[in-house]
Amino acid sequence: MLVKGDVKCLHCGFISGQWLGIGGAPIRARGMMPVQGAGDPEALVRCGRCHGPVFLDEPDVVMSASRVARVRRMRAQLEAMEGAPAEVARAA
Image 1 (cartoon, rainbow, N blue to C red):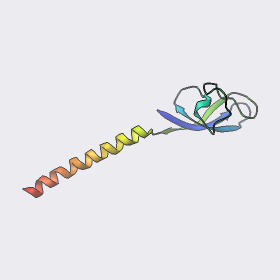
Image 2: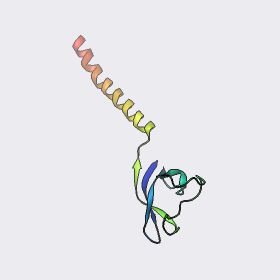
Image 3: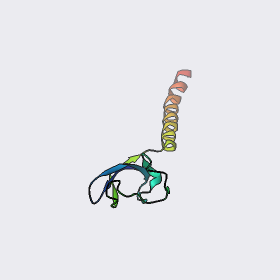
């Protein structure tokens, strides 16, 4: 499950940006928006102001593109199933 939220400092409360990644995973530079510097993408994120530890504040669940595509396919299949009996009834 993908989550997105503000990266907030535990010490000073500064918001360093937003992070997008797998829920429960460590907050690494790879998922930061906007990208911070050209450092190691696997490095843990620290506060942009005081370099203190950060946490993900108010995380929201984000649907992935593949999940959206599955939902669209399922809706199309349901519409086709609902429309099929009506077409059979018209033909009879």
